[in-house]
Image 1: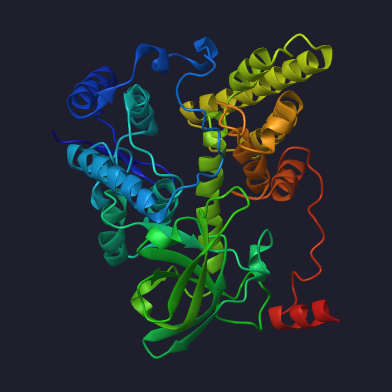
Image 2: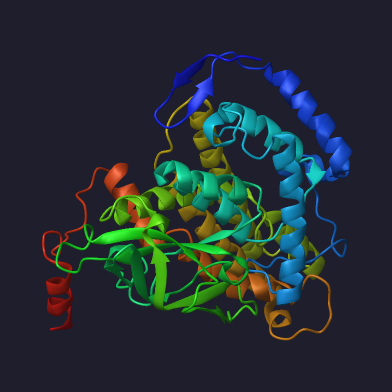
Amino acid sequence: MSHGKRCTTSVWFVTDLPDIDQFRKEARVWLEQNAEALPEADKSDDEEQEVQWGQGSDNVAIFHNYTDEHELERLNAVKAWQRKKFDAGYAMINWPEDVGGRGLPATYVRAYTTEESKFRIPSAGELPPTSMGLIATTVGAFGTPEQKEMFVKPLMSMEICGCQLFSEPSAGSDLASLTTRAVRDGDEWILNGQKVWTSGARFAEWGLAITRHDFDVPKHKGMTAFMVPLNAPGVETRPIKQMSGGANFNEVFLTDVRIPDSLRLGPVGEGWKVALTCLGFERDHSSGSTSSHTGGTYKQVIAAAEWAGVANDPIIRQSLADLYIQHKVAQLTNRRAAAGLRAGQTPGPEGSLGKLMWTANMTRVSNVISQILGTRLVADNGEWGTYAWNEHILGAPGYRIAGGSDEVQRNIVGERVLGLPPEPRVDKDVAFSEAQRLARK
């Protein structure tokens, strides 16, 4: 079919759109042929589902704890599924046609994901959504035609995976203070530095690195972005063991890593703009995931209270009521943000609000389940649904940093919602090298 086109701010969409009900029906048929349908109880809204104590998995971990072999097995399952989706035309529904997408509006993506949610789909933690939702989209926004050809479809089909090489030991929430150095040498660049908290780096082929090429200009102006092959000489990846048991994160060392200028993403000196774009995609992804069941649900906490015989304790009942109220507030905030997107609005500060509510509710869950289970959290005696909560409690603090720290999210809300003045930046117009010197005094 020949389609007319119209241009939005970032994507070309067809105007002669296929019927969305027919699109949904075709997607459902394809899913029925290629995936296992979930039981009806698992397809129902969260409000309708009941938790039966002692049935199914009692895993409520926030950060999973698997061996590398198991991680790779899970990742390969996701890759196989994503390749099927890609070949069937469901992996790049709202991508422009010139990079291999179907050029359809986001409503078609939501129609597909609604149908897909009714089927058992493999999952492998943080790397796939980072690779497809953050790295591929950032390359799509800043890449040359050659870079888009090289990366977008391979990333979206998961032929390759990409991770973020952003944070550093001294540059976390203040990412613009990074010091990984990029020095130009003819048609190549030499990279030296250390990145940390990199999700999925052990299993990724590429990393999107933000580096500093100029220390003599203000810190936001001296950065340049690169796509770095993680098998290049001088790249070393080490897992970081978490207190909850797993090693989801990694530190990546770059020692005299040579890469061609053709792997530079965006103009020289525009690395901060590349980083902000990628972080914007990350914030949207994080806020969208606030309705997920990562770390368990409030109904699992209620089931634990009933099992432990404390559901009628007035203090516990008050805590459970507060947990339910805050869950509903976060849910309604997410629905309001989703309704805005459906109406064509650009993402707003709701993403930061959703992220803050999510992490606050994780802390509430930790506090309430600690009241309920007490010493059962200290040692594993084999009881179903008890010691398993230990991984939630130890993992919850991590999400106060992941996807933009709580402090950063509060700044966004303060400035963009409440209209408060931005934080003072004494280093705004100072050369980065001078700002570092003054900070050491």
